Image 1: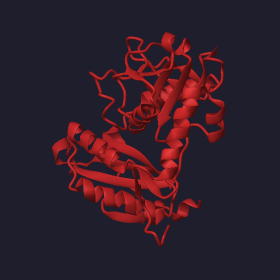
Image 2: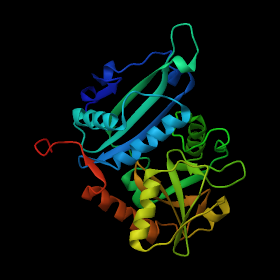
Image 3: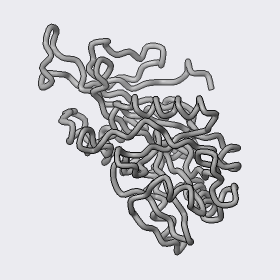
Length: 300
């Protein structure tokens, strides 16, 4: 798709992508002082939009960024931005920055927040081909930020540690990276949650992670499929010794892992439970279940 046809929402206005600008003095740019949420459309419908908006407003409340838009108004702006871009399969992001302080001041309480919404063609953390093959992953030496410093349930723009971990994995020739906390427990990856399968049960870390919407969807699908789930601390050893490992994200759905730090996981192929969850997830997406239509019947 020609990016010139994309439209961006900024503070109540819909502008062409080339005209979408914010001040260099916005604290979102200067200090990463911003929260965001990422959602996606598939076949013309946005998946679990209300859940994403609730999570965004939770982040806003915790970091004390006030915006005048109600959740329903923001929801309409997200739908309208996607509609104006003409995208049926879309990666959508809403960013709210602390905003711009009065000239010559640094008073955080006097900033005017900036609200940005954009939609671009659907983004995959791993390509569909790589998802079918399974990913090769590295455990990052960079550790996750402790929740006592910055709770990862706040979906913020402070993500340099993620970028460093990604670069480390790429330098090692790996597809992705999984991070540990300062005590050696598995947390998450840059933009995804982590799951282990052992003895037919799915395990995933309890804390020090973003509470992913796709993660919650995995729990829902597992319950429907009669697969037991447990939320429990995990170590790198647990992953190495697992029958299966998979990742979950808005950007790609369910992504099997077949190798971690040179160790094959299970038989070195995407496992049966990973494949089952993957198939059920995309069946849900294709069906439009839990989804909000972007286009009118005439436009669709």
